[in-house]
Image 1 (cartoon, rainbow, N blue to C red):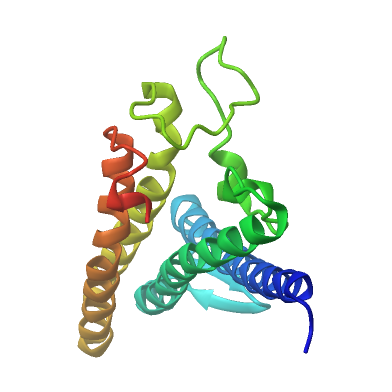
Image 2 (cartoon, rainbow, N blue to C red):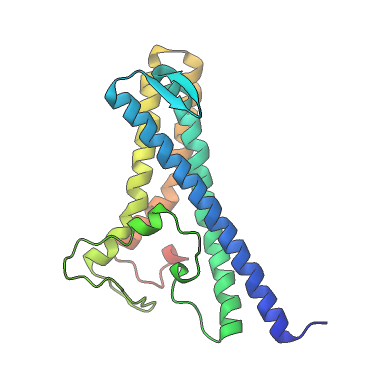
Length: 215
């Protein structure tokens, strides 16, 4: 039998490894999703009529037909990692408090696989805003500028959903099968996006740190 200190260390190592694996997967899915969305709109807006995806040359009509399915898979994967990270963060925080004697202030402290959204949320508009903002878990009300990062994911999700529905609209000139599949895929990602978007918007509206939207 190992000692209690070794058990606490092992528990934290496992919890941290699990958290890092989820964060790494989230970064991959987000990067892939953002790259694909940028590629689709760049091809459409420049009017080239062809998109180059993984070495393949695809007609724009074909790209529109497969876009709802691709965005559905990727956005569901991102939502899944967001939900999983909350569970993993709670376990890592509990294990860390048992090992170090105190809880971590934020996920940013121990996440070693930060993605582009993590850095975007650190952008600030207020010219006199401090670069280093201490985490205050019991703070009931935050300033407007402090709450702005909560809109990052809702805006991203709206762009993705609008892209998916626009793809269905563009597919009307093609096969009815692709239109039906695209409509179903768009509806699925809309349904699963409502919960996280509602949580982020409520955080932006000023929900306290004790509110369920932070759990």
